[in-house]
Image (cartoon, rainbow, N blue to C red; front, side):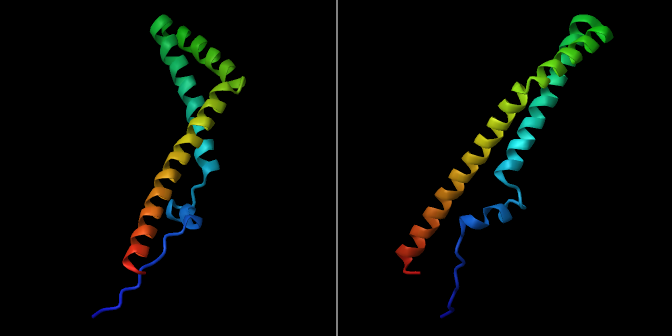
Length: 106
């Protein structure tokens, strides 16, 4: 009979499993993506409504909106929620794994 050693899944190592990515990283990326999205939407909407001049006006308007900080804040909030959801799944998996180990006597 082979003695199999089961490793323990630690939530402390979650950042290492994710390649060193932290909740703050998720929030930063979310904020940056939101700002880029606002600029892209402004340029696309402006182009649709008024060609190249419309694109310039739409992009300028989008940049003004970005300077309020609202899109970045919304993106950071969303990035944090994505992290939280992933962490909740990770905790669920960890709890299930730990419960199964205990039930099996390990």
